[in-house]
Image 1: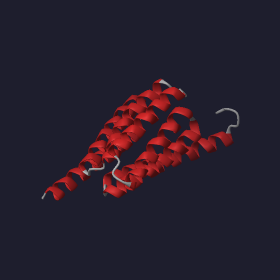
Image 2: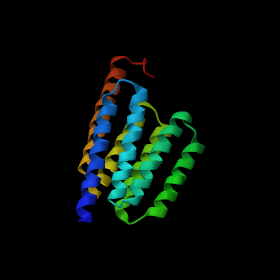
Image 3: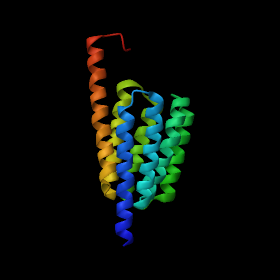
Image 4: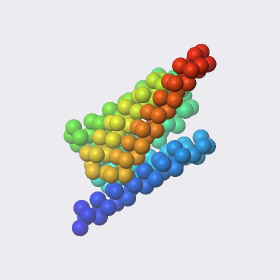
Length: 175
């Protein structure tokens, strides 16, 4: 009975995160986008917790902190190092096995991308982080979580293509 209930709860949180991600990326307002993405990460953390993937749950919560700090302290390597240290500590404290590795890789890629990179390189790193998060969702069996990350990958790839095309069409404008 508990397995069935936890599976349903985990899928519910994963699908909630998917819905919040779709609403976030369809929003034209940056403030609404950020609030919905923060809410989606809370749903991801709850989903991972229900599936007892403690490293992914802890790192999903740290994503909330990372987003706020990266926006406030762009290119600040000391703050980035603090986020990576907190992530490493969380991973060490919650590590259950190699199935936790994709969540750790996602956190590192996303953190480096958000703090150090901009434009296309940042989006490439965030896309790679989304691929790693997708693996984490698939490992725990979350349909909604995996679909949400796949949607993020596709949306991100389209944006990278559009940025690349704009740079080629209007050289020097976007540098």
